[in-house]
Image (cartoon, rainbow, N blue to C red):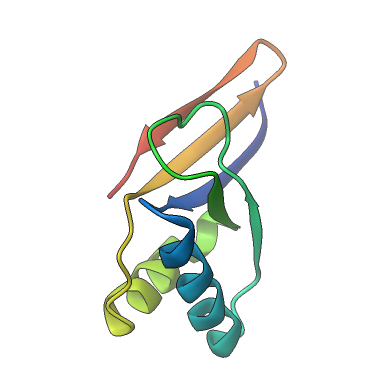
Length: 88
């Protein structure tokens, strides 16, 4: 049973994360800057969390603003644990 699932964009540096945060604010997409989930360990300490239903919009923002990202992931949290799956 899935309790929660959401999208996460990770970055190679905090600088890229901050630049991306500004781009997302300008687009009015619902998002939050969060510590990178422990399921995704190979990036900087910050990530952008967004509703999974907005994944195509998030990809468009990344492409439109030429953002330097590490990856886009789907994070699934259940009662038995959690995992991340790379989707881009």
